[in-house]
Image 1: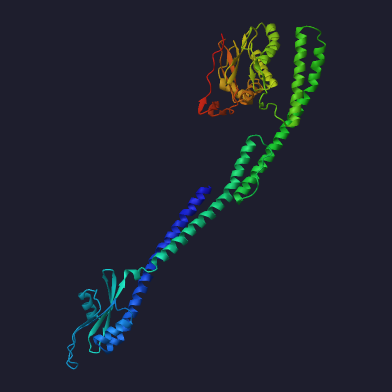
Image 2: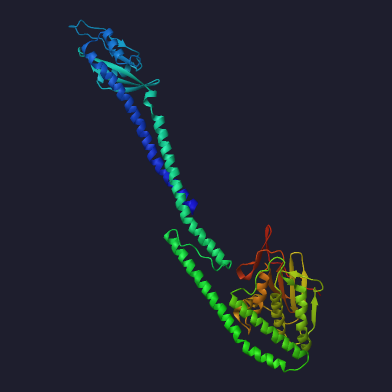
Length: 472
């Protein structure tokens, strides 16, 4: 916008300067020419009285010399045939530059005329003599006199025109800055708000339109903050309501006595109480439950997988399911909080138990690469015919009896590291959910149309990584 305004102002000012400077330059040139010929007419007029009195050569030479133009003036007196005066011969004083035909024409017509000669022009002025004949006074006007002062005048015009152009561009630039600065602040505020800086506001200044835009942006930001606060309060209140049924479950679990099933139930109730407390604290403190880990933060994915598989293996044994775990023999550090990875695994394994029949086998594989860690959760169930619809449920549609939170938790965990989640077919014949966890701190993935995922890589744009083959 700023440079566009400057270019428009530059073009308009240049056209205005040219439109006025060119005609003015032509007028100045004509004025200089008229001035030169006016001086020539005055010189010729100074000789005319003497010609009307006498035609003596010596006297005329003195008159011409006194006029100060003896080198540029010539007098052409025709021969006289008057018998009373005894007749006189033709007299030519000075250097003749005009053609004889031009002089004869002026003498015949009796009107002043100009003619071009080498080095300039001549003014031919007719003068009536006492004898009745017409003498012609020739005044030479060199080109130097015609163009005298033109260079200075044109230089002044060019300087004024250039000053006008520079001044208009400077004014346009200042106006552009005044318009662009509020627009840039509005863009920066929008980016900051999009990055989660809810305290970002835009100064309400600049042109009227931009001030109105800033007012609307600040009002929108206030509403976003209020809506998020209301959602946090709602989440805290709903979570708090779960305390009563959890207390009942805990008391009932305590009365189950000893045994693996009873211990497992008490452990699950205790974990559920901790999760509810975490939700309440997070909502009250207005902090996101899942945040990007800093340098050195994260957890050991292999340890978390072993721990959660030990929990779910007891239930799998009761239902006759075969369980396989691979890739957890060595530590696998990932930039994800321990609780977040555990919640994601519980969501995926819970789906296996919820959506497959008893006796269906499942497996968890961990693949540790140079720049990423891939966690595969696969089963031998009927599979998912429409993976995109399943991911849509993960985004919260709530269809097919699902709350839509399980896959959404997994997706947000992966995308917080710059990775992604894909659903495909497993080597066991059922569903395979692949969690790609990025290790080198790349940008979060950008989702395009139809749910496609693209990730920015150094120096090139790479589409979503193909699903790695599961271990046999």
